[in-house]
Amino acid sequence: MLRQTDPQASKINPWDNGYLTPLVQKQSYGFDRQEARKYFNYPKVRGGILQLSEDLFRVDIKPWKTALWHPKAEAYEMFEGGKLIGRFYLDMHPRPGKYEHANVVPLRQGKGGQVPVIALVMNAPDGLMEHGDVVTFLHEYGHLLHGIFGGQNQHWAGQSGIATEADFGEAPSQMLEEWVFDYDTLKRFATNEAGQPIPQELVAQMNRARLFNLGMGDMRQLGLSEVALRLYQQGAPADLGAAYRGYVNRYDLIPLPEWSQGQNSFSHLAGYGASYYTYRWSKVIADDLFTRFAREGLRNPKTAADYRRLVLAPGGTKPAAELVRDFLGRPISIDAYKAEMARAAR
Ligand SMILES: [Zn+2]
Image (tube, rainbow, N blue to C red; front, side, top):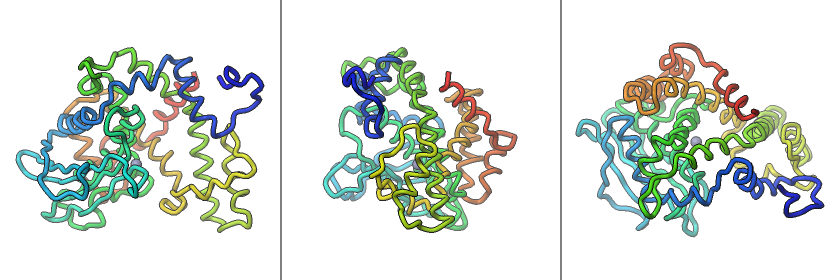
């Protein structure tokens, strides 16, 4: 692909990847990100994601009339059978001085009769979004749901909401991402300006393109995991940049150049400490949890109710291995993750 524009090119540099990937996805998989973007207008995406949680978990979400810190921020209340069970803010669009990534900020833990309050902060366009932004939105919203469902009548604040073992924390959100690759879910809210739903073929292309470079992305995650483990195990080496490049390049198929100082922008190194590996390990668990939905139906209310009751509602009151066993009826397995990798390699 690079040689189509640069016939002399002999290697791909790390910064080429973000440019080349959509081109390959378009040429080899028929998936055009810009075409998909026409179906993801923010207000409809927000409506679709809130509706998805109402459908799956039998809750009602209504606007919450309360003071807000910015005209673009939004506030909602979640009810179940008429009872208030959670409140949340959405602060979705960029502005100067705002936090630049995406995350969920618990503002008040659910404890005793106290209702959880959570903010979801993102930097998505206030109009047409790329599908990747939709995935991020649903991912963060998954943390928000975990915070609310796991924060009902907990005795201790420390066990309320997203209080599971750290290497399980990403699993519920990573699993939920599957729903915005599901045509049956997307057709309900992903419509273009004329109101036509996203074509089934476009969703099929999106799913094929999703597998592109999956293995390479995984190797990158393994390299970053090794950086985190090694630096916390051995302390800071004299040449931090060289150590970082050494660990990452052991795995990455596109090596970092000699001058790279990647550790300076690896913010998870402080936030996650040694346990950056949790992103891969949570994905193993997410793929495993999803097997039951894949078998019983993504919109099966009984499966969703079991999932909420057995995995999300306990918050941090049980070891993660027990949560998974309660839901799947067996211990955690790496098989689903391996199957997805095998599918990508085909
Ligand atoms: Zn997350």
